[in-house]
Length: 187
Image (cartoon, rainbow, N blue to C red; front, side):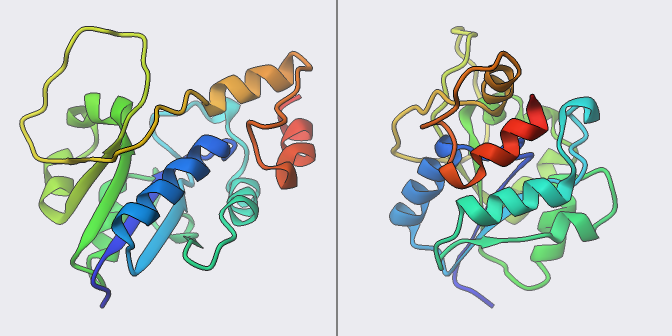
């Protein structure tokens, strides 16, 4: 059992520098005993037409999150599909009781739409990193979370895929170790 497990999940389609920056800041601020990067196998809210297969995304994450304090996990590849966060958390809570879930502010805004979101809140502490999103009207949540002190990183996997499709550079937006692979995947 670990004193603290930080869970950072997502489609990582592809993982980008923004993901890396947020993970580094969260690690620095919380110093978790274990920091899991969990690519989603089959995210229920994403169109499978635009998502690279799990093995590729897992491999990209291994190349991007290579420091000893990050652990890229294939847990969602082993759990039933679709990849619901609650399933991952229920599995992990068999081993760790102090789980922190790292999500973006855009996800917080829609958290009440997540599958079994109330159950998730019973099992984790939410850590939210700031995100820019178009909608400026205020939103409210009636549950507790910790806001990560972080700059807003305006990089998205969708923008990266679109840039590649248009033949534009993504240098500086993604780790050099995966540029060639993702350029082939999304062109």
